[in-house]
Image (cartoon, rainbow, N blue to C red; front, side):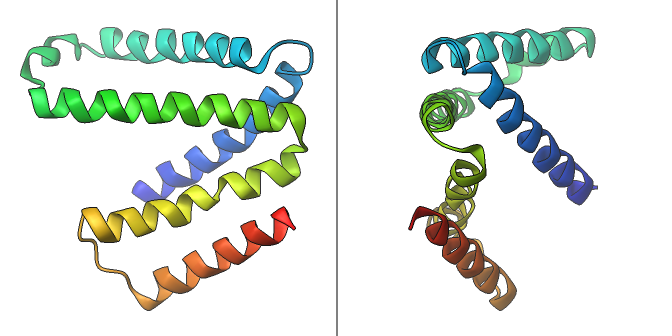
Length: 137
């Protein structure tokens, strides 16, 4: 099931890039990011409230709060830089470079989460890195 969710994530991320490029055409990229984030905020809180998950907030540990907060800060910075990049550049070139995040995520997962890299994963990461770097030059 996780593969289906991952493919859906990739599909909606692709739509995000296309819609965002059109959306930042005539406004400041930071304002565009704020509008987008507000929509995401309403959508996700709606899902939590209508899914009856709001009561689970009392069970969230301090450690979990900390890591979710710094994850949110990282996401916000990523979106701000991404929107600025697609405002100034072509989505077809920005998106592949942005996908270097996949390679960086893998490296961090190996270092900090002690995930074991396989030959297939390493080869895939190298191909992504080469493709992304090729888009820069």
